[in-house]
Image (cartoon, rainbow, N blue to C red; front, top):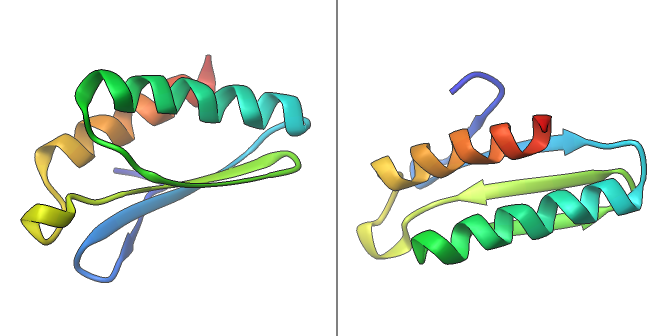
Length: 80
């Protein structure tokens, strides 16, 4: 996935920029709801105008198809 970085062999992460804290928080909430629907939860860092999402499947010991699908969903949520 373009714009995603590999974190070791076990995760993928991406940082997003937003106009302010409220926009970043809204994105984090939307990602959280998507994660709940799929019962697969990322590590998320939230700050003023920024958020970082890290996907990994800990019990599989690395990156799975579900991580890739949710990375795509995160990108879609960030853009609209």
